[in-house]
Image (cartoon, rainbow, N blue to C red; front, side, top):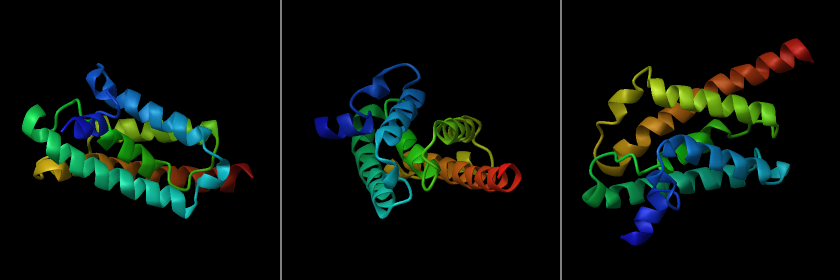
Length: 152
């Protein structure tokens, strides 16, 4: 069980006040430090899928001790950020835009995001952040296209 707590809390970040934001920022830092070739590669997609699968499994396991959708579980924020940054240009500007968009969708929870929290177990914990990541990804695509069209 200790392994699941470490995974779900992203090595203890979930124990900090504002852990979701910190976990998102940690993922952003790691993403930015990776070689630019990682962005848009099948490795990025594979890692994102692994984060989702492992996060769902761990969130289900810790629910027995921590309760439904504990704030200690922040692997869901990592999954949402990973989705948001899929195929994003490897720049600080897009990293910042992605972080702001994801956190906005994750906090406000518009367009059916909140309903996903009601799903059982780790699926419910992860699903709302996955959809927040998908929405942030879509808006990010629009920003990238507009930037390319209007500023190039």
